[in-house]
Length: 276
Image 1 (cartoon, rainbow, N blue to C red):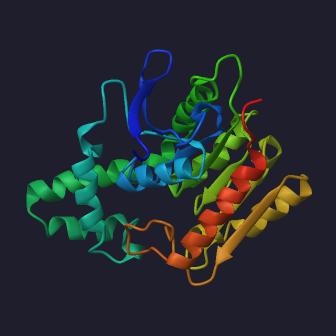
Image 2: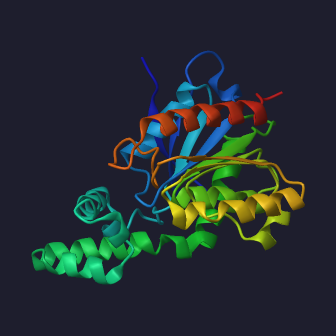
Protein backbone atom coordinates (compact mmCIF):
# COMPACT_ATOMS: atom_id res chain seq x y z
CA UNK A 1 0.00 0.00 0.00
CA UNK A 2 2.92 2.34 0.65
CA UNK A 3 3.31 5.23 3.04
CA UNK A 4 0.27 7.41 3.60
CA UNK A 5 0.69 11.07 4.51
CA UNK A 6 -2.14 13.15 5.91
CA UNK A 7 -2.71 16.72 7.01
CA UNK A 8 -3.77 16.97 10.64
CA UNK A 9 -4.95 19.78 12.88
CA UNK A 10 -3.59 20.03 16.41
CA UNK A 11 -3.13 22.42 19.32
CA UNK A 12 -5.42 23.38 22.17
CA UNK A 13 -7.87 24.88 19.70
CA UNK A 14 -6.85 22.88 16.62
CA UNK A 15 -5.20 26.07 15.40
CA UNK A 16 -2.11 24.42 13.91
CA UNK A 17 -1.70 22.25 10.84
CA UNK A 18 0.96 19.75 9.84
CA UNK A 19 1.81 16.86 7.53
CA UNK A 20 2.04 13.49 9.30
CA UNK A 21 3.49 10.26 7.91
CA UNK A 22 3.56 7.01 9.89
CA UNK A 23 6.16 4.32 9.20
CA UNK A 24 5.14 0.99 7.72
CA UNK A 25 5.42 -2.31 9.53
CA UNK A 26 4.14 -3.56 12.86
CA UNK A 27 3.38 -1.15 15.72
CA UNK A 28 4.10 2.12 13.88
CA UNK A 29 2.87 4.14 16.85
CA UNK A 30 5.60 2.59 19.01
CA UNK A 31 8.26 4.39 16.97
CA UNK A 32 10.09 7.61 17.93
CA UNK A 33 9.36 10.79 16.01
CA UNK A 34 11.22 13.23 13.81
CA UNK A 35 9.97 16.80 13.56
CA UNK A 36 10.83 18.09 10.07
CA UNK A 37 11.08 21.90 9.89
CA UNK A 38 10.40 23.66 6.63
CA UNK A 39 12.48 25.91 4.43
CA UNK A 40 11.25 29.42 3.61
CA UNK A 41 8.99 27.84 0.97
CA UNK A 42 6.72 26.21 3.54
CA UNK A 43 5.65 22.57 3.71
CA UNK A 44 5.89 22.25 -0.05
CA UNK A 45 6.15 18.97 -2.03
CA UNK A 46 9.88 18.78 -1.26
CA UNK A 47 9.36 18.99 2.51
CA UNK A 48 6.50 16.52 2.27
CA UNK A 49 8.81 14.16 0.40
CA UNK A 50 11.53 14.57 3.04
CA UNK A 51 8.95 13.80 5.72
CA UNK A 52 8.07 10.58 3.90
CA UNK A 53 11.76 9.65 3.69
CA UNK A 54 12.07 9.81 7.46
CA UNK A 55 8.96 7.65 7.76
CA UNK A 56 10.49 5.19 5.32
CA UNK A 57 13.48 5.02 7.67
CA UNK A 58 11.20 3.90 10.49
CA UNK A 59 10.22 7.09 12.30
CA UNK A 60 6.93 8.84 12.82
CA UNK A 61 7.58 11.96 10.76
CA UNK A 62 5.79 15.28 11.01
CA UNK A 63 6.20 18.64 9.29
CA UNK A 64 4.48 21.56 10.98
CA UNK A 65 3.18 24.19 8.55
CA UNK A 66 4.55 27.38 10.07
CA UNK A 67 2.68 29.53 7.56
CA UNK A 68 -0.70 28.17 8.62
CA UNK A 69 -2.78 30.51 10.70
CA UNK A 70 -6.18 29.97 12.30
CA UNK A 71 -8.36 29.54 9.24
CA UNK A 72 -5.56 28.71 6.82
CA UNK A 73 -2.67 30.38 5.02
CA UNK A 74 -2.66 34.02 3.93
CA UNK A 75 -3.12 34.47 0.17
CA UNK A 76 0.51 35.51 -0.32
CA UNK A 77 1.75 32.15 1.00
CA UNK A 78 -0.55 29.84 -0.91
CA UNK A 79 1.28 27.10 -2.82
CA UNK A 80 0.85 28.60 -6.30
CA UNK A 81 2.03 32.03 -5.16
CA UNK A 82 5.15 30.48 -3.64
CA UNK A 83 5.83 28.45 -6.80
CA UNK A 84 5.57 31.68 -8.84
CA UNK A 85 8.06 33.31 -6.46
CA UNK A 86 10.47 30.39 -6.84
CA UNK A 87 10.36 30.63 -10.62
CA UNK A 88 10.99 34.37 -10.44
CA UNK A 89 14.00 33.93 -8.16
CA UNK A 90 15.40 31.32 -10.53
CA UNK A 91 15.77 34.10 -13.11
CA UNK A 92 18.09 36.03 -10.77
CA UNK A 93 21.63 35.28 -9.59
CA UNK A 94 21.54 33.97 -5.99
CA UNK A 95 23.37 37.08 -4.75
CA UNK A 96 20.39 39.20 -5.85
CA UNK A 97 17.80 37.20 -3.92
CA UNK A 98 18.23 39.20 -0.72
CA UNK A 99 19.10 42.44 -2.47
CA UNK A 100 15.87 44.51 -2.42
CA UNK A 101 17.05 46.88 -5.15
CA UNK A 102 17.97 44.05 -7.53
CA UNK A 103 14.71 42.22 -6.83
CA UNK A 104 12.62 45.36 -7.29
CA UNK A 105 14.27 46.13 -10.60
CA UNK A 106 13.46 42.63 -11.88
CA UNK A 107 9.92 42.78 -10.49
CA UNK A 108 9.24 46.06 -12.27
CA UNK A 109 10.09 44.36 -15.56
CA UNK A 110 7.11 42.02 -15.10
CA UNK A 111 3.47 42.86 -15.82
CA UNK A 112 2.27 45.05 -12.96
CA UNK A 113 -0.17 42.61 -11.32
CA UNK A 114 2.27 39.71 -11.59
CA UNK A 115 5.16 41.73 -10.19
CA UNK A 116 3.05 43.01 -7.31
CA UNK A 117 1.85 39.51 -6.37
CA UNK A 118 5.35 38.01 -6.44
CA UNK A 119 6.74 40.97 -4.52
CA UNK A 120 4.17 40.54 -1.76
CA UNK A 121 5.05 36.85 -1.44
CA UNK A 122 8.79 37.50 -1.38
CA UNK A 123 8.36 40.17 1.28
CA UNK A 124 6.72 37.65 3.61
CA UNK A 125 9.13 34.84 2.76
CA UNK A 126 12.26 36.89 3.42
CA UNK A 127 10.78 38.30 6.61
CA UNK A 128 10.16 34.81 7.99
CA UNK A 129 13.36 34.88 10.03
CA UNK A 130 12.04 37.84 12.02
CA UNK A 131 9.21 35.63 13.27
CA UNK A 132 11.52 33.05 14.82
CA UNK A 133 10.12 33.41 18.34
CA UNK A 134 6.54 32.81 17.16
CA UNK A 135 7.62 29.87 14.99
CA UNK A 136 9.55 28.26 17.85
CA UNK A 137 6.40 28.48 19.97
CA UNK A 138 4.53 26.57 17.24
CA UNK A 139 7.33 24.00 17.12
CA UNK A 140 7.20 23.55 20.89
CA UNK A 141 3.51 22.73 20.49
CA UNK A 142 4.38 20.42 17.58
CA UNK A 143 6.94 18.49 19.62
CA UNK A 144 4.42 18.16 22.43
CA UNK A 145 1.82 16.90 19.97
CA UNK A 146 4.23 14.27 18.68
CA UNK A 147 5.18 13.09 22.16
CA UNK A 148 1.55 12.42 23.03
CA UNK A 149 0.04 11.42 19.66
CA UNK A 150 -1.63 8.02 20.15
CA UNK A 151 1.09 7.12 22.68
CA UNK A 152 -1.09 6.16 25.63
CA UNK A 153 0.45 7.05 28.97
CA UNK A 154 3.98 7.20 27.56
CA UNK A 155 5.77 10.15 25.99
CA UNK A 156 7.38 9.49 22.63
CA UNK A 157 10.99 10.67 22.11
CA UNK A 158 11.32 13.44 19.51
CA UNK A 159 14.23 14.95 17.60
CA UNK A 160 14.18 17.81 15.07
CA UNK A 161 15.73 18.39 11.66
CA UNK A 162 15.41 21.67 9.78
CA UNK A 163 16.44 23.14 6.46
CA UNK A 164 17.38 26.78 5.76
CA UNK A 165 14.89 28.74 7.91
CA UNK A 166 14.06 25.42 9.54
CA UNK A 167 17.71 24.74 10.30
CA UNK A 168 17.85 27.90 12.38
CA UNK A 169 14.57 26.97 14.06
CA UNK A 170 15.77 23.44 14.82
CA UNK A 171 18.65 24.85 16.86
CA UNK A 172 16.44 27.47 18.48
CA UNK A 173 13.94 24.80 19.48
CA UNK A 174 16.81 22.98 21.21
CA UNK A 175 17.35 26.04 23.42
CA UNK A 176 13.70 25.95 24.54
CA UNK A 177 12.61 22.30 24.64
CA UNK A 178 14.28 20.39 27.47
CA UNK A 179 12.90 17.06 26.20
CA UNK A 180 14.26 17.33 22.64
CA UNK A 181 16.62 14.43 21.99
CA UNK A 182 18.60 15.98 19.14
CA UNK A 183 18.64 18.86 16.66
CA UNK A 184 19.94 18.72 13.08
CA UNK A 185 20.71 21.97 11.26
CA UNK A 186 20.92 22.06 7.47
CA UNK A 187 22.45 25.40 6.38
CA UNK A 188 20.61 27.49 8.96
CA UNK A 189 21.76 30.37 11.15
CA UNK A 190 23.30 29.08 14.37
CA UNK A 191 22.49 30.25 17.91
CA UNK A 192 24.46 33.10 19.42
CA UNK A 193 27.24 32.29 21.88
CA UNK A 194 25.12 33.46 24.82
CA UNK A 195 22.45 30.90 23.88
CA UNK A 196 24.77 27.90 23.95
CA UNK A 197 24.25 27.30 27.67
CA UNK A 198 20.53 26.87 26.94
CA UNK A 199 20.98 24.06 24.42
CA UNK A 200 19.45 20.90 25.81
CA UNK A 201 20.56 18.21 23.35
CA UNK A 202 23.27 17.20 20.86
CA UNK A 203 23.41 19.25 17.66
CA UNK A 204 24.46 18.05 14.19
CA UNK A 205 25.09 20.53 11.38
CA UNK A 206 25.56 20.36 7.60
CA UNK A 207 26.80 23.34 5.62
CA UNK A 208 27.96 24.28 2.14
CA UNK A 209 31.42 25.77 1.65
CA UNK A 210 30.06 28.36 -0.79
CA UNK A 211 27.27 29.44 1.57
CA UNK A 212 29.56 31.81 3.46
CA UNK A 213 26.75 33.87 5.03
CA UNK A 214 25.88 30.76 7.05
CA UNK A 215 29.07 28.73 7.09
CA UNK A 216 31.22 31.54 8.48
CA UNK A 217 29.25 31.19 11.73
CA UNK A 218 30.37 27.59 12.30
CA UNK A 219 33.85 28.03 13.88
CA UNK A 220 32.68 30.41 16.61
CA UNK A 221 29.65 28.28 17.39
CA UNK A 222 31.76 25.11 17.49
CA UNK A 223 34.20 26.76 19.91
CA UNK A 224 31.38 28.03 22.15
CA UNK A 225 29.86 24.55 22.23
CA UNK A 226 33.23 23.05 23.12
CA UNK A 227 33.79 25.55 25.92
CA UNK A 228 30.36 24.72 27.35
CA UNK A 229 30.87 20.96 27.06
CA UNK A 230 28.03 20.64 24.55
CA UNK A 231 27.90 18.06 21.74
CA UNK A 232 28.19 19.56 18.25
CA UNK A 233 29.28 17.59 15.20
CA UNK A 234 29.25 19.11 11.74
CA UNK A 235 30.35 18.79 8.14
CA UNK A 236 31.13 21.53 5.64
CA UNK A 237 30.87 20.18 2.09
CA UNK A 238 33.49 21.43 -0.34
CA UNK A 239 32.03 23.28 -3.31
CA UNK A 240 28.45 23.01 -2.06
CA UNK A 241 26.08 26.02 -2.07
CA UNK A 242 23.16 26.85 0.18
CA UNK A 243 20.24 24.37 -0.08
CA UNK A 244 22.43 21.59 -1.50
CA UNK A 245 20.01 18.96 -0.12
CA UNK A 246 16.94 20.26 -1.98
CA UNK A 247 16.61 18.02 -5.01
CA UNK A 248 13.97 20.27 -6.59
CA UNK A 249 16.32 23.25 -6.88
CA UNK A 250 19.32 24.11 -9.06
CA UNK A 251 21.42 24.23 -5.87
CA UNK A 252 21.10 20.45 -5.38
CA UNK A 253 24.33 18.48 -5.06
CA UNK A 254 23.80 14.72 -4.97
CA UNK A 255 26.86 13.57 -3.02
CA UNK A 256 26.59 15.96 -0.05
CA UNK A 257 22.80 15.52 -0.02
CA UNK A 258 23.06 11.75 0.19
CA UNK A 259 25.91 11.78 2.69
CA UNK A 260 24.19 14.28 5.00
CA UNK A 261 20.91 12.34 4.92
CA UNK A 262 22.68 9.11 5.83
CA UNK A 263 24.48 10.84 8.70
CA UNK A 264 21.20 12.37 9.87
CA UNK A 265 19.59 8.93 10.05
CA UNK A 266 22.55 7.61 12.05
CA UNK A 267 22.21 10.57 14.43
CA UNK A 268 18.47 10.01 14.84
CA UNK A 269 18.92 6.30 15.54
CA UNK A 270 21.60 7.07 18.09
CA UNK A 271 19.56 9.62 20.03
CA UNK A 272 16.04 8.28 19.66
CA UNK A 273 14.68 5.07 21.11
CA UNK A 274 11.35 3.31 20.84
CA UNK A 275 8.69 3.70 23.49
CA UNK A 276 9.41 1.64 26.57
